Every structure is written in structure tokens, then in C-alpha cells.
Length: 227
Image (cartoon, rainbow, N blue to C red; front, side, top):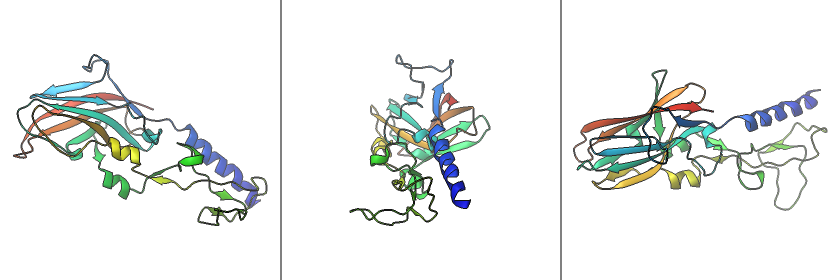
């Protein structure tokens, strides 16, 4: 009886993972936008453009794990502008501030996505059920399930989770450094997930002089949470 109960439990878990929607941030009707419809804010010669629905990389369902936001900074302030994830937050309607996670922080969180490759992008990696055959290149690694279920087999193979950040996330991340006057930079910020907690958030950017450390302004862009 114990063995038979295992199959519907695993099926329920995989179904639940597949049905979770991906969270995106959409601009409010009152938010100023570019001609292309992307939300923006500007002050003291600095322009911030932010897109909360721009992620197209791997994993495609990243919005289930964190909240990715693509930002573009254009600096016409006459000062060197510091570019640092620590200067960005998502301020929730609950009055809680969600931090932007750096790439090392994402790695330390031990987050992962379903294994890539034959398992497919966004597919939860199933564990091995039953007694695996001794095919070349296969072994009895940590993904072997000792609870054999004759109704589920004889064999099922999965791929171990791929840790975050993925290669796409690293390549697309907002560079950290100094944006000189006249320059522009674009990249993604990865915030703590807000999907289960907030209906509306505001992207807030602190404008900090890279030379003196002085904060000389703040830019806000409000979003509606969709997911």
C-alpha cells in the first residue's frame, strides 16, 4: 500500500510545478512610458527605463523563483553614477522592501531549476523510480528511488536541478561599477520573489555619486504584479 501511494504524490508534485504561473510586472496606466510602452522615470539628468516582463532567457520560468526586471540607466547628470544592485529595491504595497540579489547571493541561496537538456527547460526533474538498468553511461546515483512502484515503471529518468544563476542570468545581469556622464547601461536585476505577497510594487533606484558616495536623487516606477 505504501508503494502505490507514492505514485500519485509524485504526480501531484510534478503537476503543481507545471501549473505555477510565471510572475511579471506590468506598468500602471498612469506610469510614464517610452514610445515603445516601457515604463520610465527621470530626475537630475538620470533616466531609468524598466521592463518587468522582458526575461526571455533560460530558465523561461525564472519568474516563478525570483522577480527579474530589466533596467536601463542613462546618465546625463554630469556626475559619475554608481551602478550597484544594492541601490535598487522593490517596495511592496505591504510596505516591505525587497532586495535585489547579487549573483553570489543567488548562488548561496541554493536555488535551482529543473535540469536542462533532454528533460527540457522548465520541467521539474523527476527522480529515478524503480531499479535502473545497467545501460552504458548510467549509474545508481543519488537520483535512484528505493521505493519501487510497479505501477510507475519500470524505469523513469530525470536530470538533477541546475543551480542558479544560469549562464543566461549571468550574461544578462546589470553590470556593477560606474556609469560616466553621457553613458548608458542595460541589464537585469533579480529581486526576491513577490508573487505571493504583493499586488503592486514600486521599483526604487537610489542615485549615488560614485566619486563622493552622496545620494542626489531617487527614481520610482510603480508596477502591478501579474502572475
